[in-house]
Amino acid sequence: MAIFALWLVWQGGWMIWLISDRGKAAPARAICANNLKQIGMAFSMYSNDSRWERFPSLSPEPGQLFADYRVLYPKYIPDPVVTICPKDEIRKELTRMRQRQAEDWTDDTLSRFFDDHSYYYLGYAVLNDEDVESFARRYAASMRMHSSMTEDIEVSNYQNPGKTRRLFCCGRA
Image (cartoon, rainbow, N blue to C red; front, top):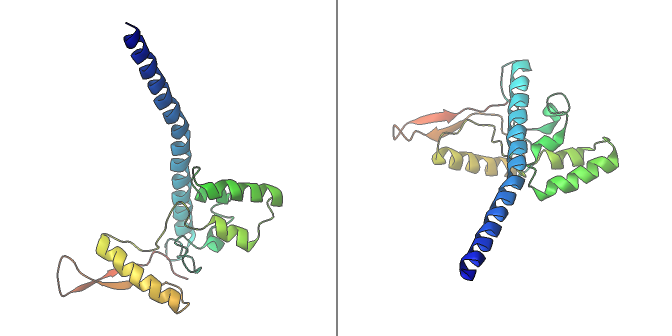
């Protein structure tokens, strides 16, 4: 009987730990989902306002796989904190920095917020792994030449070998 009681206490503790852990994760998931929704809405509003109804261009900063913050902030994304997942450690640091600066943003601070810490944006409509590889090769070459990526990319057509197709660039300068 004592072993059964001990087992029940152990199981109860295990269940409480699971419930409390899930309880902490649920708000973070909700915030993350809300962030993605806000980013999507910002891209959609930018597209509606742009001349050719395109999404924002990829950031010109080397290694930064996110949209160019200069076209998004402050009109479409007034609070850059939405670009960072609540579980990401950099969010705490940047939020403290934001509070110290009292909304007086510098380009360096904004660039750090609109980095690819939590969410990625390629700026191209990719369909499969081959498209991602083609994008990565083109991106690396573009960064070596210090040029922006604003043109469509020719890739091999996985459905029709020997033919090519285009990865369409979502944003143009």
